[in-house]
Amino acid sequence: MKTGKLNHFFTQYAIYIVLIFLVAGIATSDPRFLSVDILRDILLQNSTRAIIALGAAFVLITGGTDLSAGRVVGLTAVLSASMLQTADYPRRFFPDMPDLPVWAPILIGIAAGLLVGLINGWIVSKLSVPPFIATLGTMVIVYGANSIYFDLKPNESQPIAGLRQDFTTIGTGFIGPNGPYSLPYIVIIAIVVAFIVWVIFNKTRLGKNMYAIGGNSQAAVVSGINVKRNLIYIYAIAGALYGLGGVLEAARTGGATNNYGNMYELDAIAACVVGGVSTAGGIGTVPGVLAGVLIFGVINYGLTFIGVSPYWQLIIKGLIIVAAVAFDIRKYLAKK
Image (cartoon, rainbow, N blue to C red; front, side, top):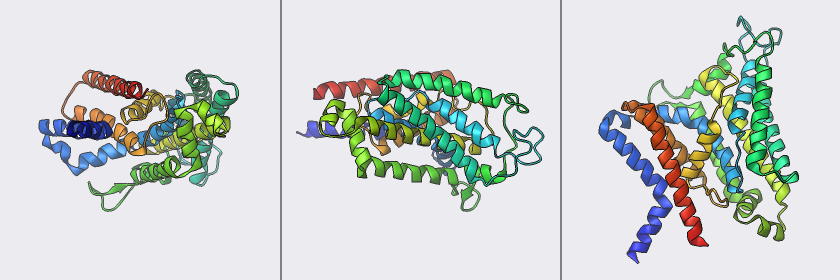
């Protein structure tokens, strides 16, 4: 009996146990890793990735996948940054454009992400194209469109810089005195987004339908759920979250290029899988996704902090991903 309860405990909380052991292992090598400064830096660097991963979780829980996330991040970063440069910047993307309210380009970026999500959802639900192929196609299309936009005169594929302070403050500003105990705005935004996503997952009809579709789409249809319409909503929300992540990434880094967000979709999917989102669909939680993002954040930051080669970091990340998927498949087969 006790063994069964112990197994259940480790199954339920394995992701958090891994995170604790990972932090403890790095701190053993260098105790400075447990400082508040380091924690703040990890949260700051991974806030946008958390938002993107939460978007990917919507799609994964339905049993789909979204390969367009990273390129949507790049598109929305370039769109928002191109409209928020200072008036005196010598290579201004739009030389004659008056200063827009900071919220306008932000909303345009989010809307662009939402539009790509709508297209993904329409292709998957109405044309019955497998999500992997549908989003692979839109990934390439979005990157091409973004590169054409990025290459327009007078920019001609130069990195977009010289962003206005009222925009970059969103990504670099903070509440409280300057120091380790300040709370960055971007972390607050990520927490608010995570709470909203938690509410959608757990307290709304869309959330219940999402889990039902991922658990068994045919049973969902029989129970009266409009699967096609719900998939369009879900992909649209995911796209909007990618768009928000792209805008915040431009604000955080103070610039943008058409290669922003490259491979972010794989990091987001990996964080979700490691965080307990089932590759078979129907299973996933917001705390699990956030823990998955933190695990990879700790790996990237912590192993660099103690001097581990980036190549070894890739090997460790790969092993964690494979182990997480193998564990997920084992649980799935055990239930059948």
